[in-house]
Image 1 (cartoon, rainbow, N blue to C red):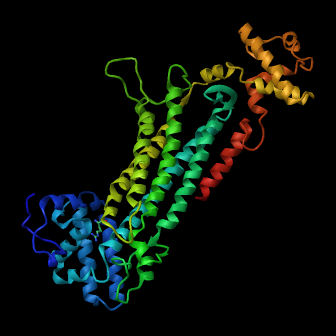
Image 2: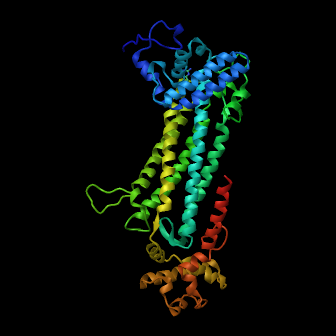
Length: 465
Ligand code: ARG
């Protein structure tokens, strides 16, 4: 291992030899945590203002520090900032740049603060802002689903259990099932936000600080709801990241379910829907192919997000209080899961309004597989037969239909009557697909008017957000 002679550290005082070059590279996080530069600067601005308010910095020192930090922000935005791996992380890169720019006054910024509370503050600020963006993307997708559901409230498709035709349902109703899953994801996300939006700043290294700091002031400056309440916990807690990863894992599980359905539905065997060409790709060898790559990839990306949840849980497992360098490993999974979730939600919100239903194919598929058998049983029950007996009668009718290669609705009244003389000619409207879905006319049912009612409730909810 080679030695790095060019020491430029903010913590070099007690060291007599330079950091090994490998160790320098191995321990540095600047390549990824520079993504937190806005939050880092905002945190430092709040801290400097608080130090001035507490009389720890003079008004002139405060102004120089604030101006210096804003100038650094601009340099970074202009791509006019040299990130240095010797300075390890985003925090020390910015602090060094400040001192280089304004001189020794820059060295006062870190009074009463540690990188431990600094990084915890930065990540919380970052996660909070990302939560707000993810929440907006979920809302956008939910409102797209409402649009499809409204348009397709009376579009009939087979509903499945065990992926076998079960009962006819409205395509709009199916869309609103996805809407519900996303609604729960949304509420989990906002719940997580409450625990994210607390300020660890002031916990310093782990025990708090001897300066007369004002933690309420910095919390308020940064838009946090309150300061955190225990300094040891403040610098070591990454529960909020795990909660976000857990939210994201479940959201991705939901998107993987939608994706699986889109992949099935676009296949020649189902042919229920068309995805717009711009969301598909071709095959380099098979000219006829149009592949649903976007849903497939979203299904696949579920794996990396689930992996990040496990990474973060494992990262925290058995960590003694308080801060440990392990925590530096929180950022890459966190960043990647956030980026992945945002991309997938964006893709869905663009794709769904452009989905075209092949109504005739869906209708024909719903007619196969005796999807209205339960309706026949319910009909017999309404005429006085106990449900178990009706189940038996309909089972026999279906077996007969299979033998004759006929759907229940295609059997003659005489044929049907051989199974029960309770059957009259009012049976035929019951056995139609329209009759079947229309009869499920209660809250949460698939009747088109119920789907429209669910959409109306959903739109009102979305408007409240
Ligand atoms: N880069 C570090 C991290 O991401 C910052 C905090 C480092 N603190 C320390 N005492 N080494 O966690």
